[in-house]
Amino acid sequence: MRKLVSVAVFALCAAVCGAQTIPELFGKAKEQIKAGSWKDALTTLDTLDAESRKPGNESVRGQLETPLAFYRGVCQSNLGDSDKAVAEFRTFLKAQPNATVDGTMYGKKTVAAFERAQKELAERPPSLAEAYKDFRPRPDRVGEPVDERWGDSPIRWILTDAQKSEWAAIKDPNVRTDFVEKFWAGFASAPAVEGRSYRQEFECRVAFADANFAPDEERRGSLTDRGMVFVLLGPPSYAGRKPLRSGDDVSVESGMTSFGSQDAGNSEKAMRAAKPNTTSGKLATNSVKFGSPGSHAADSSTNRVETWHYRREVLPKAVPFQQVDFQFVTKQGYGDDVLQRDSNVVNTLTAAKP
Image (cartoon, rainbow, N blue to C red; front, side):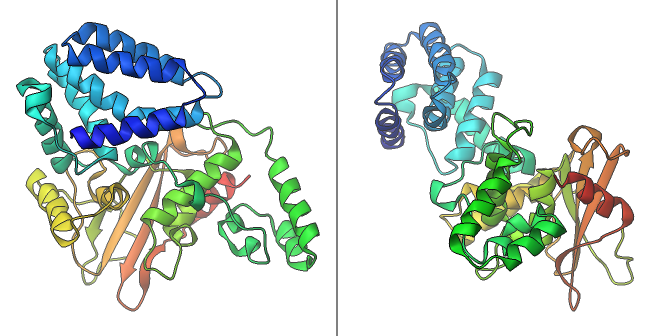
């Protein structure tokens, strides 16, 4: 853990060299923690948090969130607030799933809270919505090249038929560039999402879908049916899977099946055993199976149905329903994660387009 935190601190300081107060505050908090001044350290961490949220510090904020959660967990565990400590360590472990903690440096209370957070994550992995909230796309994976393939990229999900026709007729690279600039300028007045512009949110969703829904190395996750729904609607309220048994109708109602927490833990252990370097993004994909209320897990059968439930608060305003369910069927001879396009689904996707 000493090595891990040192790397995080180095990255933070390198990213904030222009914001002098932030590295100073970070260093002060570390010294207070080293001295066992837990309350003072929490106060400094709160000040550091507020400073990082000021305009112009967006890149700093991204570097700061993970170590901030860890050090808060250390302070709260030593102050006897184990529940808050576990919550902070859960946030930290989502970004650093293979991390360990040095008991000789941080104390037995910290180790106990840290191990409890690890156990809870194994039994109840983050939902798809939680995984997206913690997602930080790589800068080199954001945005689409402006070439003849731009219209066939995930941009297709938000292009109108008229725009598709106009784009297909363009042959001049300069005219293509002008088209793309005007296209995104049309969203300048769109409401921000979690502080991100419409374009930034769109590109973040595309990056998440590519990282988590790709069926193989040849196809982008954002170009699958699940990717399309995620790009247009964002993460579902909750999700789950059930096996599609012989004789079942494709349009099952619940799309869910309950399992015990031990099954959830075994599923993650199996992933780690097969691939020790499994990323948090891949674990997040696996967590779709447990993301509904209660403990749920996917059947390992090749025939299955996965259901994403979108409640009223995350649906487009024009959609008149309290909940819309999107079902993705995988069946031999039928396809993988094929969206079932009933009228409610089609109308909701139409309403989600700009």
